[in-house]
Image 1 (spheres, rainbow, N blue to C red):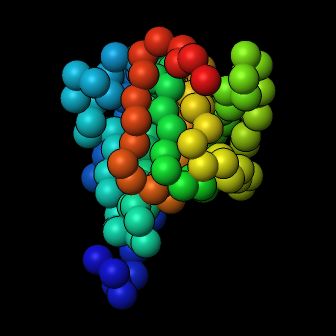
Image 2 (image 1 turned 60 degrees about the vertical axis):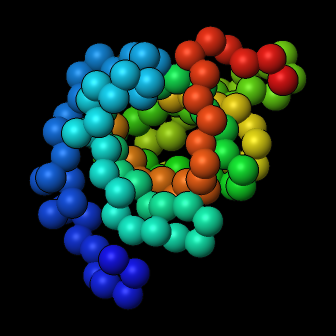
Length: 129
């Protein structure tokens, strides 16, 4: 899809809203219809997702851009023993630093677009840094 226009509205019509996301969803493959790959980008991909609930811990070998398109979420960055919450609303973004474990808590639903380096590491349990 590089070099092609991507219509986010059309792309979101192709995903299904995932209610009550849990950390186990990513490992089981359940709920994957709530996520879509839009295009490759550098060492990763551009993704969209539409869900509510809590994600697993994840980290990436490069900086990840997280942009909230609709709704709200809180992303928790693991810095040593400290979980630093960053609340994001529609129109806001954050760059998650390279190799920083992070997770999402989204009680009411969110539409999000990320630019995510690959590969992604996942952990259901809080990782030791």
